[in-house]
Image (cartoon, rainbow, N blue to C red; front, top):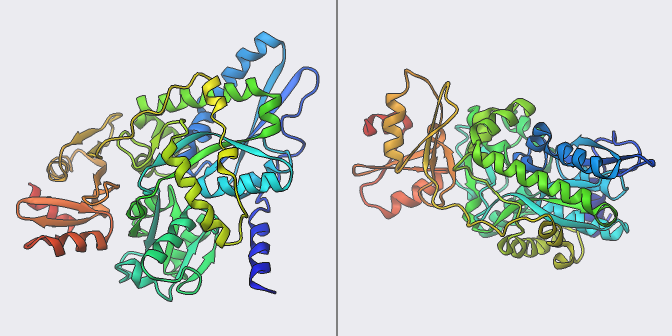
Length: 448
């Protein structure tokens, strides 16, 4: 088998659905009933405003019920949950899912496969994004001895090929001077399989998307090796719809986007409650959900199709082409801003400002923010008897938020700074005479 043939076989394999419970055509209807099938990823928490949170709030059903009162039809929503975007694409291209949410790399595969199989799709909104790329992280086992990406040469790395996390890994390895294909032993695994492999020690590192790195770090099963924000290239998740459905059921698509906007507003206005809700629905730790989706989280939620995100999507195409997963993708033709405009969405909001330190105490449905990591540490130390659920700090180099007790701390005179990775801390120490790495326990003592 040639290398090219092998790649194409892999591309097809990636799109075989992991579950086929959809049964029947999506958007199916008789004279009085319309069924809308939505594919989502409950544990990919950057999509919650079009998936897990939206489903639990019932906003889409409310919008459809209002439509039904006007046109006399009964609308039903069928929610289908998947681990990655690939099976959602597979179901969309057979007409079994109408609306789906997935990451930027899977969205491009969605566009390519839809066109190839004559079931074209459109990108109609964004769920969550990070303008620097911090939604993807490479992690290792605690105490692994790996200190930087360069240490991965010749090592086993688990990722989901064709995912945004795989894209981050490829770009990061190339930036480090490592051949992404031959410089490491890459294993194509589902996120949960890769997480188990890392814990068991059968792989040396795991490159994955939200919320896997944060969840594993919170549980003490992983430490960050590479912060995706080092690439300084936006990553995001978005909503894709079958073109046929979008044209035949434009009003229903409008209702979905209206419901997504309402869910986004709910997340912004009640971030702790939203995190608790997502945690209850998924089994994820609420503290890990809040790391990404909180008031000062790694992800920013806004449905707008920001030009920075579309530009980044175009830069992703060559990565997937080199992997043999897509041919040419006409991103401009795939992106359709009209449904958002029609649904009355406001223009894109300004991106989030500098990340702040944040403390979440037990028994509280609100959090406290602090102007500096040192102030956070002082408050955390004082609150230990009352009970701390989680403390979050921004990386001093990239701004990526991380758990305070999992961060790498540096003392620089009377100042204390936090970093997601050892390499970030080393970079800072090398550039600041007298600065030194300290343990979290020592950082707490110095802050008090």
